[in-house]
Amino acid sequence: MTGTLYLVGVGPGDPELLTLKAVRLIAAADVVAYPAANGETNLAFEVAREHVPDTAQRLPVDIPMCVDPGPAQSAYDALAKDMRTELEKGRNLVYLCQGDPLFYGSAINLIDRIAPLPVAIVPGVTSLTASAAVIGRPLAARNDILKVLPAPLASGVLERELKSASAAAIIKVGRHFDRVRDLLYRLDLAGDAMIVEHATRAEQRITPLAAFASNERPYFSTILCAGGADR
Amino acid sequence: MTGTLYLVGVGPGDPELLTLKAVRLIAAADVVAYPAANGETNLAFEVAREHVPDTAQRLPVDIPMCVDPGPAQSAYDALAKDMRTELEKGRNLVYLCQGDPLFYGSAINLIDRIAPLPVAIVPGVTSLTASAAVIGRPLAARNDILKVLPAPLASGVLERELKSASAAAIIKVGRHFDRVRDLLYRLDLAGDAMIVEHATRAEQRITPLAAFASNERPYFSTILCAGGADR
Picture 1 (tube, rainbow over the protein chains, first blue to last red):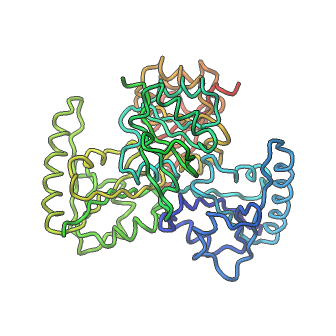
Picture 2: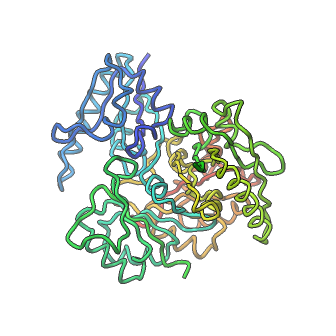
Picture 3: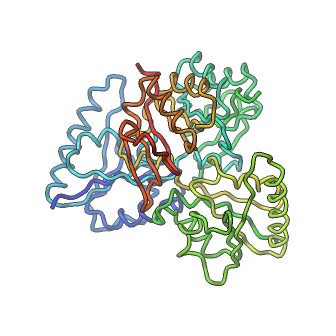
């Protein structure tokens, strides 16, 4: 009997937004793996911490992040090898994923590497709907076109996509903030835009784009805005 | 002390995909409201049923669905009036919402009608990420453009949006299935497309678009497919 690797979404940050299924699987895991860059404990582990059994082996995973994808791919290869060894012993592994494992997550790098050993995915609440919930505004309704747009995309692409959206969530804002803000002003979409940082966490902050200080950069944030499609 | 109206996402259908927060609020509710068209108990209630206390008042909500929006708007007005009466008595209300309340949900019709009385929103797992989870395939990664496209949109709009997406979820397929299928074949996106019906429920069915019988129509389904952006 081989074990199963469970990629478990732990939601956006509030530990109460774990699902019952996530809690059950974490509590029964033989090994609990989680991202831990530079030796720092990751949000996904913090969110799940109270459910991780003392008896479970903890497996922090440090994947190097650099422009060259080679080192990260090698790190996933090595991780998958270790995980396969555990699975072949019949042990069940949980890999904790912030938000949802398949929504812009990195755990997808493990799926093909673990197969044909069993991998199961437990969906979680995304930062997308969590951000809408904390500002109390619909994300999309009826026949709206909703787009998720990573901020690193070229400005021309973002402009085209925003113009034909009913609503958009701009993710991975970070160092692209100034450029995105300028674009939203130019498209007359800034008035409605909200910046949600650390949705559902203690550090949560909600700021209208228009009120965001010009010398500040938002952190772990999503910008929710209307698109130009319905004008 | 007025009560609070909680719009609570109960997830896609598997009762284990309720969040801990949803369970806590449902178990403490004075009134549990839920959609119940034509007197039939709705999925949202079925998902949450085991947590609804015997002492809670149950409030089935039947909103008329027709082309003229008038009757539905009047029904929401009447519902909001009843809810305000309960809230003013200090009772807490939970309104159960399939998936996430703000992701193509109808509960958004209550937000403005209840304000300035307190409304809080509890995000849930959407059918979007649940569908990806049950097929075990990434929804979006890295700098992908992900689009949610309601099938009732005009074919020209769907075509334009699919061509410039990295990945798409086509929702509300129903009677638009034949047209959407033809479009996906024409854009050479059909080979990759998967139809997920009733994700995470007992009735769940996963079918490659290419294998779907020509005289059948999928029910409560999402089509996940690649877009043409990365070709």
